[in-house]
Length: 323
Image (cartoon, rainbow, N blue to C red; front, side, top):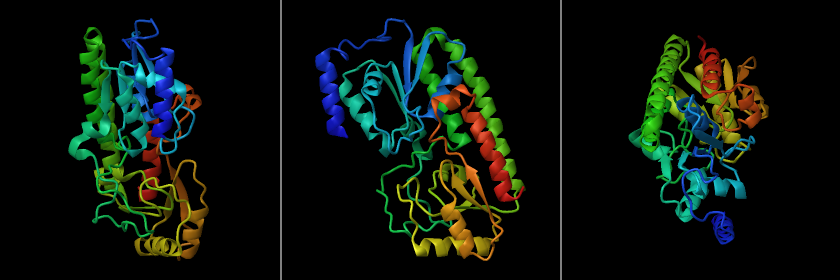
């Protein structure tokens, strides 16, 4: 991947496409802000609402999540010539780091959100106090790797939107009153969302979730002290669970008397049905939580927002916890 990006950057620089990077390279006079994934894009959309001086670009808008995303020449140009880049900064974003490093764009404001989270950024491997058994399928994490799914926490969203608003105000002080007013309104909505999640967990008959799938929801589980177990760590690419994993999760269904098994958007329920079939609770149902990793431009045009997805997830969580 690095060799490909380096080659494309070299070709683009020779062609003059990246030469003389300045604010608003398209001549519109607008602030060019590039976001890598939908949740970050929607945060910036809310924070810049009402300002006609912003061009907001979402890189991954075709439903392909960033774990397997291949940047286009257009993506490289957009990132290399933007005024502000907003990205997670995890392992899946290493290609973004390469573009930033080689772009020569000295005026770019870079919002590396895992760094902005500081101590709130969790290691990719789960903590011992949760039910999940680290690497019981033989998977191992680099000890320094951080969980990239930082947006699946209303608390993180509030913290990061405060930081992003401050960056916007420094970058475009003329529109600071607009950004500050937007941030105040949006952060209040995020705080209300957090309260609703806490109330749902408090009201729930169960305090445990079981994922027959990958597990990108660790920040959410940690925020509300929800126990969890999953077939795969984080968003590992594996899709085939071992016999031991199936047996382990089936036993968890029985011991915790769970009524629901969870999967994430875009997944089939085949593994979930296999695990349920191996348990003594055949009437267990399957629910889907949306990790926002495959939102498309069409979804956005149809009205999907970060808050709307988190509210839909809240309804699913309430059902899974027996509220």
